[in-house]
Image 1 (cartoon, rainbow, N blue to C red):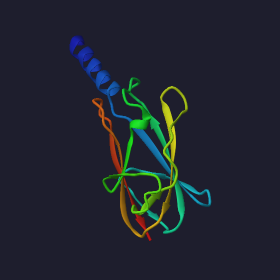
Image 2 (image 1 turned 90 degrees about the vertical axis):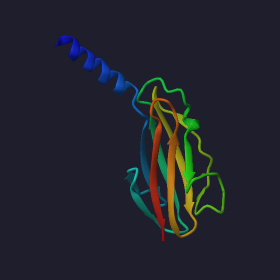
Image 3 (image 1 turned 135 degrees about the vertical axis):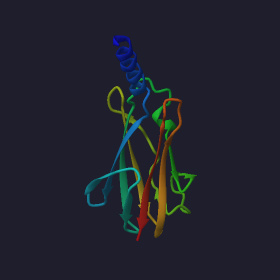
Length: 141
């Protein structure tokens, strides 16, 4: 019985240590007001206004093989690029990651809600340990 319990404990410990990356998001508007964003949620934005998404990326399996810079931000399936005017949400500043501790990385996604419509921002990290694949939906009015 002890061997079974020990085997289960080791299995779940290994499973937990190989779990996927964790990310947290906060939307900040032009007035400095902020709110937490949950992946899968839909966020309303005002056309013509600028916003910042503050991203916290935690490497929770302690030996990530991917750099934070390997994180992809796709807007409606296309790579989100700086000043790409044909995308409804225009990224206005290059994505630069900052290390803030052993396993915490931060970046700001600064953009303008340029064109009314519905947009999906996919955040993607592909790795053997589960990675990260979530979408945040935006409606610009």
